[in-house]
Image 1 (spheres, helix red, strand yellow):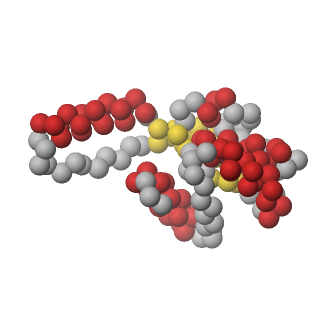
Image 2 (spheres, rainbow, N blue to C red):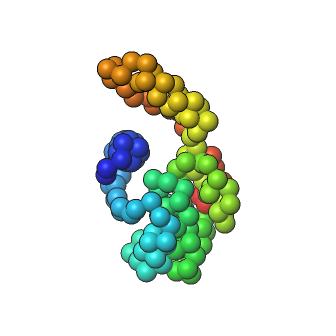
Length: 142
């Protein structure tokens, strides 16, 4: 995991699985839907029905959904899919994705403020900011 947002999302997943007493499984894909779709189309048989795939982005989740459909199964009938971002893909996916939504407008405002602060005070360390998220339940989970 190379990107900071990937590390924090993965840590949250691992913490939640540990708290639930469940064994995590992590599959790594570049943030593109096509390779993800191909993987699930060809390998879905390795996952028992009623597995829910928690994805690091809505783009990955869209690939998972499409791969499940191409493998002849349904979402959410046979498998669940949860994305992360809640920017647009969650709303145009079929079925619509359950996703962890971020307030991207507020994130943009604070990022701009951080850049301005860095310009004014170049020797000061850039602070890390965490944002609250919201689970938006849609059609890809039971």
